Image (cartoon, rainbow, N blue to C red; front, side, top):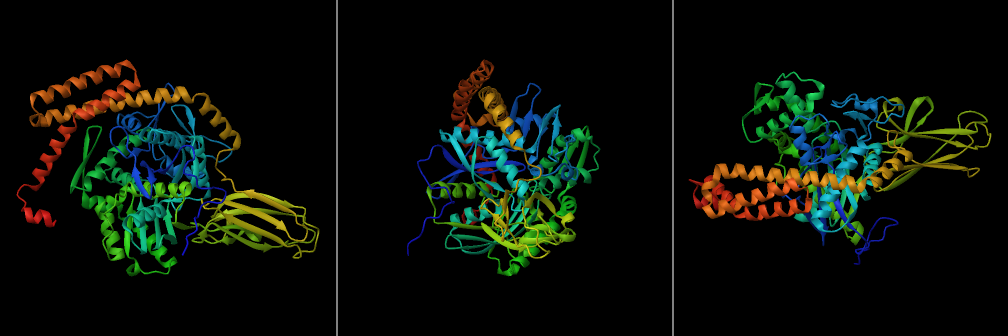
Amino acid sequence: MTLLQIHEPGQTPNPHARGAAVGIDLGTTNSVVAIASDGRATVLHDICGSALVPSVAHYSDDGAVSVGKTAQTALHEGRRNVVTSIKRLMGRSSKDARTLHIAYPLAENEDGLVRFTVDGRMLTPVEVSADILRHIKKLAEDALGQEVTQAVITVPAYFDDSARQATKDAARLAGLEVLRLINEPTAAALAYGLDKGVEGIFAVYDLGGGTFDISILKLEKGIFQVLATGGDIAIGGDDFDREIVAGCKLQVANDEMQVLLSKARATKEKLSGMEEATLEWKGKTARITRKEFNALIAPLVDKTLTLCRQALEDAQMTAQEIKGVVLVGGSTRIPYVREQIEALFGKAPLADINPDEVVAVGAAIQAEGLTAGSDNLLLDVVPLSLGLETMGGLTEKIIHRNTSIPVAVSQEFTTYKDGQGGMVIHVVQGEREMVEHNRSLARFELTGIPPLPAGIARVKVTFAVDADGLLSVSAREENTGVEQTIEVKPSYGLSEEEMEKMLLQSMEFARQDITDRLLREAKIEAQRSIEEIKSALRSDAALLDEKETTAIKNQMKILEETIQSGDRDAIDFECGKLHEITRTFAEKRMDRAIQSALKGVNVNDAVKG
């Protein structure tokens, strides 16, 4: 049997195309980038060896923008011009945003687009996400030694059309061509299925910093078919952090909430390995046990389990028929979450993959497939029903949720009164029967309908959803051939004028912005390395002889002097030398830690474990 090479319409796979294609998991709390070759993906790391890029942006008073660990440091230092968890605002209206816990002052506007102010600077979620993507793009280029021009970017399965379009706008602003938007659970299944060579029906439970998704997928002979999906874009680790703050009964001003939440996040992470942890705030110390934490988050976890049951019902499956549960997202590390998943599905979730990296790995594999060809096929689904408004404010669903994409569906409508010469097509998204309870996506008019008696005109409306989950709608009067087509632009996306202005500004100031940002990041990363090594020397200097200690201290001194020079290349070079010199020290510390952990353990038992 001969396999046909499957690729995107209009895109011919070309392994020699200019620039690399990567997979990006653009997360609420952290982001990850990976690249694939010959079906094997590699997660890319920064100069300090970290794969996780904090999805945090710092906007300094002088107009400079820093992203990642540098911005996270600014947050921990209590600075107030730091933006976090921006993913939660993607595609949201100002009205939506006011229902969320946003630490930034929202600006009033007439177009419905979310705008907020950070130290007097007006920003949109698309702009902040673009800044994060620029940083990720540069990280990938530094790691690969070549230009990165294309990407497959992951989004929550329950992201609606507005949020998906906002993500594509952000990538475009960052200088990236989006080959495909792929749902996060689907990307995880792709990575897990190819890596483990498994087949069968799996559940992907994805609980990240700001969103929750559950998908039921069938993996069979290179075909990854989504049978059902569900989720909530307002349940995640951020909400667990807020429950800790509320449970500790700490009083905090709105402009200080981000700093307190970052401390709560650290407390939450400690509780995954400890029975009790403390949260210190302005001289007060609040203690919280794991049992108390479990009780605080139980209502939110229960919501995710209800969505899991609904997805199983939509897929016409029982929990017992699920072969395995794949975990995605940092919040799945919480013991209580894993316990509840095991109780629901009757089996321990699969924990042999890194939940922080698996989504980026799947995206990278898909990026390679779209540029170099692949014999794997992804069959994703529409997360929410798409339809239009009919008489009386009713919703007529054209494409139902969990329909495989890409897809095109047509349906005929007619006029409701004599001589009606036009028709307003109001496109909506959601599961409710009344339009007012669903999300408005677009409106357009079909005019030129012949003045016929009511019910005689035949208007064929076609909804088409592409592989990215983006919608286009056309309406055609069959008797006359009059037709109107619209690519559904999200109600709260950026206008073409705004996009053009941002692109021009990004090009005009690109060189200086990049130079300033990279120098600042290099200084911060170098200083952090020095502090970490100083701390290690204070506790474990006995592991080194005098010659080794002197070499490390001399190199730290050289690096400290180089930091003052303002030469980024020199800073990076000396920082690299410091890491090389301390490599043996790090290995000795690791060996000692392992020996300590195994002390008193029988060798045979250790081997069996």
